[in-house]
Length: 491
Image (cartoon, rainbow, N blue to C red):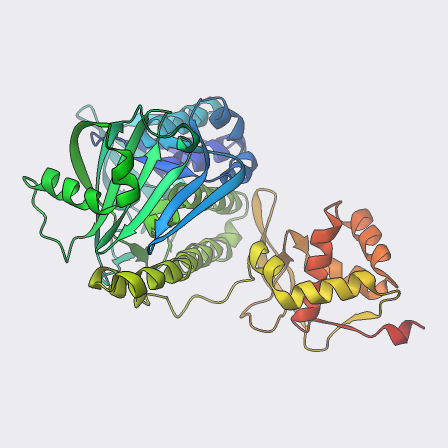
């Protein structure tokens, strides 16, 4: 029997990231990973992923690995062409190379790597994981077990996960050599919807691309023998991609993989956490699968580190992970709906109407604070921010309705329980928005006579941040009736 603080099942983006973080924090970590024999998927990591990779300490390694840059996407969705360019480069990656890079990073931080297959897990009485390595059975015991095994769901499939049966998606893909692809488009992903499916094309180099069609496995007759014919038939419907492949050469036979959605009933079980794709698989249309996996891994690592340091925090910390994991899945479902609805209006096919009408939102997942982007685009917040900025004096005070509550938040590499503010429209107190500590901001603003004093007070007491962000957070509090502005009481 070998012992470790944490056993990680699976060495993909979620497992490797969680292991690297925990090892860098001084925890003993064992990754049990079995290399897949399937061909490598290509994925597009948007420019926004850089911030997350920097936060988890992986950006430098990914930057220097030489992945093909990603400067946005070109689409023909529901018949409408569009270009979405980014401020800087993201990454187009082959998953085998990317995952191997992250595992190397985990090893460099001190994590141990075991090439093997998990044969048994006991989390009822202890965190015991049994694996087969080169025909030999080895047992590990750990304080925390992270299931990062993706769709296989080594722990997740034991009643913690459910398939979302509203629709099933099959991805069929092949690689192409495309020397004639337009030079100005060689760093862009292509997305094209058509009558009964959609396609995307991810560049892995200036001349090499992976082109994938997404079909409904329940509405399409699929056989292994006819996979090549089906792939060519569907690809011809994706006009913007097919036309650019006129002078290209397909490299090898196409292959298929399940891209159907699923989520978890709960993302925790005793001392085990479901992480990344083990917990849920989001709509491929989002191109956010890897980003979600890395974010999930960071959160799981923080939770595991908390439990190792403070065993009394087990329930609070694991519940925090469970709620955030399921909330994120719900948000991804909501985000995809408008795209499916637009396609359904134009294409008028069950492929799209089924997806547009799908409502697999968990009712027990509480409302979370809005994202930074949602706050910044809220017209009420924008209006109030302008009024606060231009006001000669302020008379901000906490509303009687904005009572304080207790809420788990991340501080450094641990979960702690802190005060939060009760806001209209949310089911639990909120501590942070736009990266701003709302509790401290409300206290500072209640004593300040103008916006300059608010900014200076926050800089001195909490941290120096972009004043525009601070103003948006303050306007958010006012818009949610948590603070009232009565300048006359200052005079």
